[in-house]
Length: 212
Image (cartoon, rainbow, N blue to C red):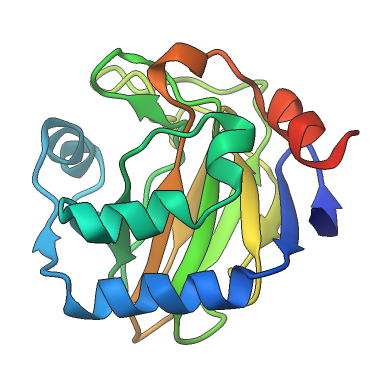
């Protein structure tokens, strides 16, 4: 069912499947009528103390019919036991994130992988980078953010999203996105495993999707 386009494990895998083009169009239709707000939660506040230019917009999908489309028309949901909630995230122009790992704010535990879908990709200038996980120091104020001044960091993989595929994304390795060279917004949607399967790893997800 799922076909690998590019395997850059353990960082990411680009993949496709029958119906993904129509599914992304459905995501675009929902996002185009959604009301986005500037992200303003505890995690964002903490990150902005470390990196003041950090800024994003988001939209939690709450309409039951929209949520049914997002989760019900996605074959990855059942295969990977993905959470039945979803959020659009928009990266703003001239902004970047800190180097970080993803954390579940509700459980204060790592998010081990995400399935990301590009929703609106307007150029190829927003770059996602992964970094070495040795010789790094976490920030004293935000434990899941890497202190870039104290760490010996080196970019070891990078990519930019395109409109035609989904991404199995390893969120436990230090990574960041950089949209500082773009004048455009970028909108994606990301899904993680539900709470009963939060220990599923990137490798587990890869095996479930592709049998390898």
